[in-house]
Length: 205
Image 1: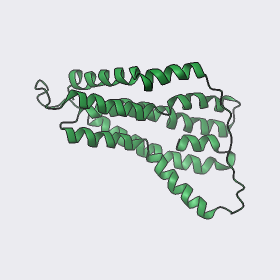
Image 2 (image 1 turned 90 degrees about the vertical axis):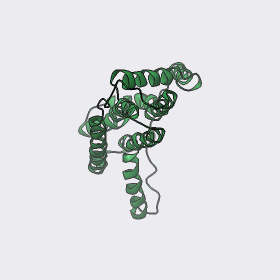
Image 3 (image 1 turned 30 degrees about the vertical axis):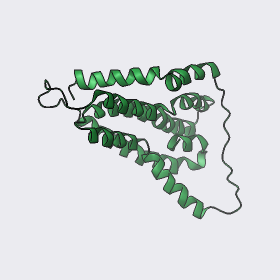
C-alpha cells in the first residue's frame, strides 16, 4: 500500500522518516497531476471527430479505473484505525494515509481518465495509459529504495516483526462491490463510458 501502509505500521519514532518520504512522494505526484491537468484543453477543430476507436478509449479508461480503485475498499476500512484516539502521531499518520490512500487515487482517477481522452492515436492511448498508471507507483518506488537500504543497515536479530492491525470486514458490502466491480463490471463500465463521453464529446479533448 505504499506510504499509507507505512503510516499504518509506524509508531512515534518513525514520524520523521514517514513524513519526509510522504512529502517527496506527494510533491512529485501533485506536480505530475498538475501538468497533466494543464494539458486538458479542447483540441483544435473540435467539430472534426477523431480518427480513434472509441472502444479503445473506453477500455483504457476502464483499466485505469480498476488500477485506481483497487485498494479503496481496504483503505476505507483501515481509516478506522486512526480514529481510536488522538495524538500528534495519529494526526500525522492519519493525514498521510488519507492523502495516499484516498485523495491521490481519486484525483488520479478523474484527471487520468480525461487525459486518456486527449489521445490522438492508438499508440497515444497505450502510452498515456502507462503514464497515468505510473503516478500511483511513485511512493512505492521511493519506499523500495528506503526498505532496501534499511535491510542493509538493520540488525540481524529480526526484532522488527511488523505491526498487526485487526480489521472488521463488512462481507455483504464487499460481495456487492466485488460483483458490481469485478465479476459483472457495472461500475467500471459505467464510469468508463461516462468519462469517455465527458472527455470526447463535452470537453472535446
